[in-house]
Image (cartoon, rainbow, N blue to C red; front, side, top):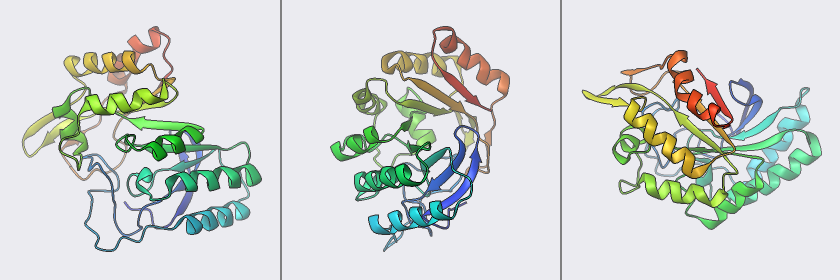
Amino acid sequence: MLFPSIVYGPVHSRRLGLSLGMNLMPTEAKICTFDCIYCECGFNKPVSHPSIPTRDEVREALEKCLQSMTEQPDVITFSGNGEPTLHPDFEGVIDDTTAIRNRYCPKAQVCVLSNSTQLCREEVVRALRKADQRILKLDSAFDDTMRAIDCPVNKELTVRQIIEHLQQFDGDFTLQTCFLSGTRDGKVIDNTTEREVEAWYGVVEQLKPKKIMIYVIDRATPVKTLGKISRERMEQIARPLTDKGYDVEISA
């Protein structure tokens, strides 16, 4: 499922309320630094001349949409057909979005869903600090599992590198993890085992995020042999963290 425009929705998000979506990637293909086996947009598709919208086009599309809306969104959410922080003028887009939000829907929050791979870039970190919500992904504490689930384009990417980049926010972000189990090409993939979850708890203790979002597969996935984790298991995973005072939201 690809998003056919720069601005889409609003949709009622399980996690964010009434969300007006922002897509900074092409409408004809997904472009991402990950190729997650559970991504609702499918797998990355090579595009010779990707039609990435300009900063002006994004600004004009958002303003036009907000002018016509009768109900104000709770959030303006950057997600779409790939990794939004790949946009060449991502910081400028965030600046424009904040200004437009202040004019048309001042109570709405600017939210960015990111896979955390571009946190090595100073301008991306700076832009994310300007957003009201930074929802940043980490699907496993182990390199092998992270690579099996997220399939990073950079084959040398490690969990340690992601953690170090996340530490730049001093806990002022939401940590997002998708829990799943299944197989791919006969290989078992499961980040809900005791070993996986205990190691993930250790990462949480290192990062101390202000909020944690854990969720399960909710839509069709490009790999068809993945299973949805039960609500009971998700509550089991969350309980030790809530007992320690962490704000954990479960979408299951």
